Image (cartoon, rainbow, N blue to C red):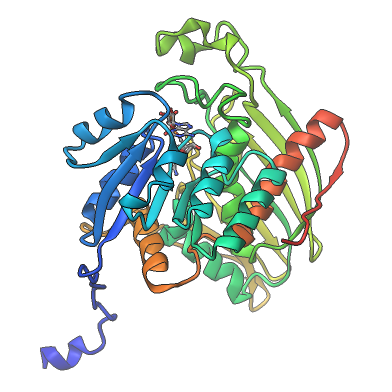
Length: 391
Ligand SMILES: NC(=O)c1ccc[n+]([C@@H]2O[C@H](COP(=O)([O-])OP(=O)(O)OC[C@H]3O[C@@H](n4cnc5c(N)ncnc54)[C@H](O)[C@@H]3O)[C@@H](O)[C@H]2O)c1
């Protein structure tokens, strides 16, 4: 009888990985986030980490030693690494700071190597276009490192919007914030213009935009009116600098710590967006997707990093009554892969089996163009049109 009843259980087959073909992987940029990449790669039975590169001499060697990975060839130039044919590289993770995303991705694609590129895609739209041209010419997989969209809750958000239960979506309020959260515990590459290019916008703003744009099916952005400020980052008394033992960091701050925008999308949808690395507030508000048949509230977290802060709520009308339906937050079960592990696994499978990139540039170009347009609109003090050329 138990067997019969078991037939109604959800399909619990586990995906097995074909380990007979090993993927030869390299890592470009062996800083903070590279630790998450190598940890996930080491869990995959079909991966051999064969090379690593970092501009800082000795950094790549120390990184692999720390992770107890032996026999890895190290370089001080990602370009030299991807062009070393003796490595027979299949794919690379690019974990450099933002300003080095485009050059490293173009070099790897031109060398015929699949690329998992950390978020944000690039700094400017123009750079992103150049990367997409290299992607098209190479025929290789290029996926952008947005692991939050692989979270079960984010998949639920998309499923709700795509199901039509909310009706026509016409307005979205989104963003996120941290009370004091300028990321400097590991140095200044997030806050200097020459390495980061964009601040809160590129670090966490891209996640808010991906959450809603992905749910909406990535409609094209048309115009953006934006503003960005740096009141906290440039403050000599900013508490975070003192806490990390570097009160002088305010002198290096060259990006945005807050940004807001009014974004028009095709299909008559408006996004009202705000993002903050620092602010005098607990959160900058929940994400709310307004629809003609229902609206969806996605609770924010106090330290925004692309995860949801509680149960979802749909506000709608049933039998003439105004009601709220709770959709419980989904928590991972013990043994479930992390979102980061899913990001690595889906990328590897796309490379191995010729599948589309899990987070494709054809979508993220819109995300990137919005970030860039907010910066440009702020500099110009006026609304800008989003122009994305054919590739
Ligand atoms: N997906 C996520 O959850 C997540 C989290 C944190 C950071 N990130 C992204 O990862 C990127 C790196 O962040 P980080 O905190 O690791 O920065 P980091 O400064 O700690 O590390 C970057 C490393 O890249 C090296 N580098 C730069 N240009 C290079 C080049 N051309 N060739 C070889 N090495 C080069 C630097 O020397 C440095 O060691 C950023 O773009 C950031 O937005 C993603």
